[in-house]
Length: 217
DNA sequence: CTACGGATTTTCT
DNA sequence: GAAAATCCGTAGT
Image (cartoon, rainbow, N blue to C red; front, top):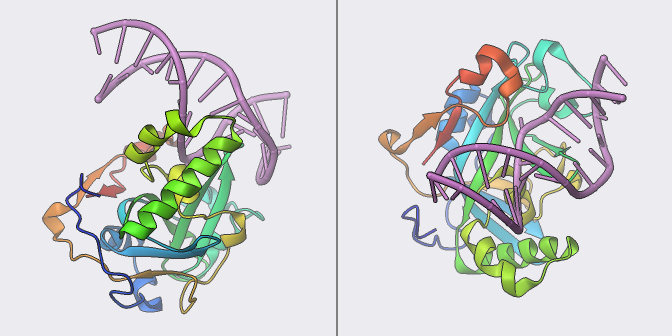
């Protein structure tokens, strides 16, 4: 939060993004999601995260995507929905990853939210609480963990889901108009602040592994 | 800061 | 039965 130069955003600032924002090309949406605020109502109350890193998954021809070659299964079904729907999947036996679909229905594009920073102090406290709680379930002691968790609060797709209380219950949700799970305007971001790089963790994707479809601040 | 291995279970073949 | 859009602790530079 301090590290990326963000000041706390006031709670309730901005307006929710509508269908028209998400029903566009996935690469454009991904870049523009940087600086926006993901909002989720959790058991601890509302948690708001400024989006700082994303990746695009661009449909049936993208070898890095779960939907490559038109693969349509129970898991990938939400990816085929129109822009603005959530796609949350379980991975590596332990973690969740959360996407928001982009483009039109039937074209399975989505943006993976890889990293957020707390938008305000209350959100920071709630993220820390959820991350500590998850770490305790793995049998750790809070004293040793707090420092490392504070340093890596939500800087990865699995950590982001833990910190914002996102799991399978949040899969396949149409986020447009939802009061408890949505994206809203945040900080203005200039295009020169947006960096790009190769997507993470898709070494199997041949030439698609080299596409510069990861965007971050 | 990078590199490596283990954890753990759903999903798909 | 194998792989996985990851994370964490440890060890080394």
